[in-house]
Image 1 (tube, rainbow, N blue to C red):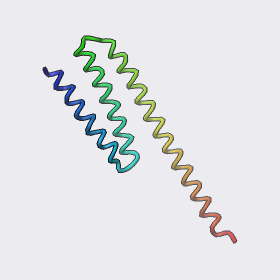
Image 2 (tube, rainbow, N blue to C red; image 1 turned 180 degrees about the horizontal axis):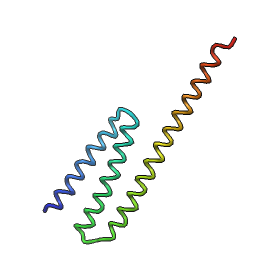
Image 3 (tube, rainbow, N blue to C red; image 1 turned 90 degrees about the vertical axis):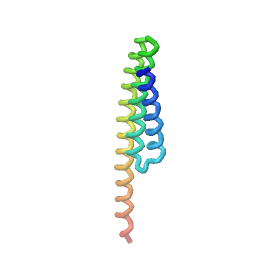
Image 4 (tube, rainbow, N blue to C red; image 1 turned 60 degrees about the horizontal axis):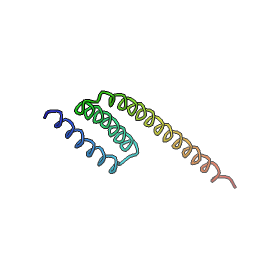
Length: 100
């Protein structure tokens, strides 16, 4: 009974994080919300595996946790590089405006 309550609580928190991912307002809020959804999904897989008596679900949860972590790092690096490139292009555009 208590385990089912834990699974229900995880589902509710995933829904709340999904709302945060949709509303934002910044890209970093969305990235953190998606990362939180991934983390809660790992917990949900582990809890369901426990309820079903399937310990191999823990292996799946660990692989999903690694994919979630690597994906979050990749997205943040992409955002950082894109912002640096946009700033560099804006700097170049400012430098050519004053030229005759």
